[in-house]
Amino acid sequence: MNHNQILASTQRQAQLEAAKAAFFNSGGQITQARSFAFKPAFPARSDKIDPDTILKRRRISPTMAERKILRRLAEEL
Image 1 (cartoon, rainbow, N blue to C red):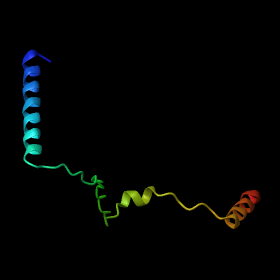
Image 2: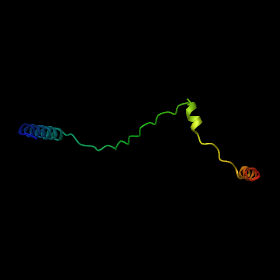
Image 3: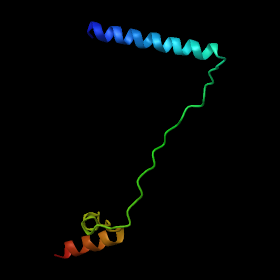
Image 4: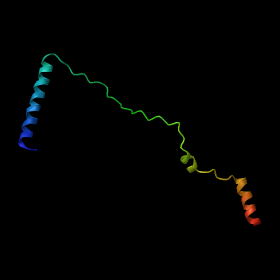
């Protein structure tokens, strides 16, 4: 920070203090409000189904009965 910036911030601080004193001298009071909880809205889901996505889905694993049948077929070969 250079000297000019320090002087400018000191002057700004003095202005703020003077404005604050004028506010309180005129009968102003500070009230503390509740805090604001920001909750962003999530984007809406798309109704479009991409064909590439369907192809990449995991296939259903075989049931125990299907596994037994596959083992029997493998043994017969």
